[in-house]
Image 1 (tube, rainbow, N blue to C red):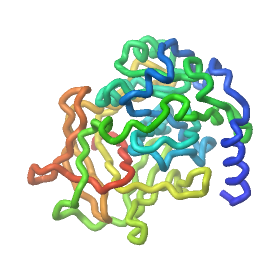
Image 2 (image 1 turned 60 degrees about the horizontal axis):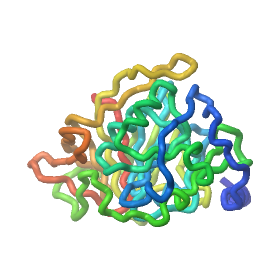
Image 3 (image 1 turned 60 degrees about the vertical axis):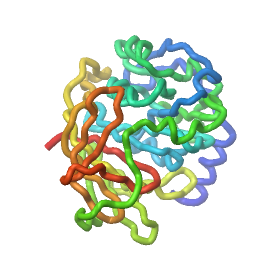
Length: 314
């Protein structure tokens, strides 16, 4: 992206552009949510999870670098969607925001009543969202927190102002993921690049020794945010999971993949330019996920943003 275009987009985001009507279908057969709740009650002691569009038309993203965790989920048609989780810092703007999926409900059970920012969901999924132990914050329930940018066409132009959902960042105590941070274990394999391919999406993580970070690539291009900064992670987890067909589908008849994040299996953890083949375990939805090395010890992550890519078990 040129500096001029980045400046134009940044100015448009800061200005607020066009206000969302909060009731519009997001273009994939999604509808309204009727979940209750006000911004003040959602603000206390909860992580903020934001569903982020990851189609090519939605890039570059805004506010992604401030997330503590970025989850990569498979969706219809072999594409992917992001869920960014915020605890330590709230960016001024996050987006583009898109619709929720059934996978999100199980994944978010590890947190205590998390706030979920999203733009609609498949009609039959909405009652499940309403019953889930989370605090739903779609545009129609927090309209002043969202706006539509005028530099992209809908549905790739809906953005969130997180501080209108919660006054301050809740802090690390709400990150009940089971992740451990600290010195790297012995072993591992020197690794320069790790790629993960879905049917219609591809991710790469390239080690940068000078930055001490994994540089994120999407569909063959370096990932950056609207302020021109590269997207990078301290730790990357490629978690191999069972992905099955859910009962939900879009208007084209493409069934939504359901990613099973409860259970156990294999994973590859990238940190400090090395790859570690480990085991993951999450006994029940209310638990976080533990990662252990071949000698049974807990795998410790590098400090900084963590990316978790849910890949189909091999």
